[in-house]
Length: 120
Image 1 (cartoon, helix red, strand yellow):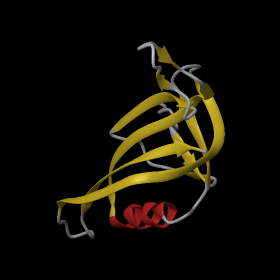
Image 2: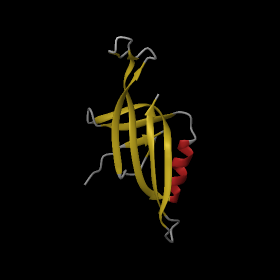
Image 3: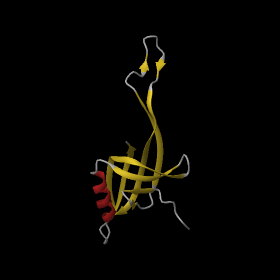
Image 4: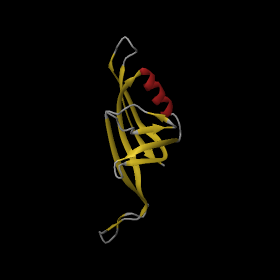
């Protein structure tokens, strides 16, 4: 059985995630909001900014690789787009990086890692 390759960061395929959530957001201008008349005004300056929430269970070696990616200001990310069911490549950064020890093993442990990938 072949699995979908959900994420590739800077040319390196990431392991299969335990969760993968895809979100599109709009960026609004400062002029957006409620007017004096009480109506809403929405000035969208950019539509469809990708935000991917992802989590993994992985080895200490992969935790080390992802920790290094977290420190990069910009990365090239190829991701599985749930809107088109195809792949797309864009520039992203990591936000909200969390890691926790799940199990201490004889092979350097099992870690849970989660973070958001946000499109520039």
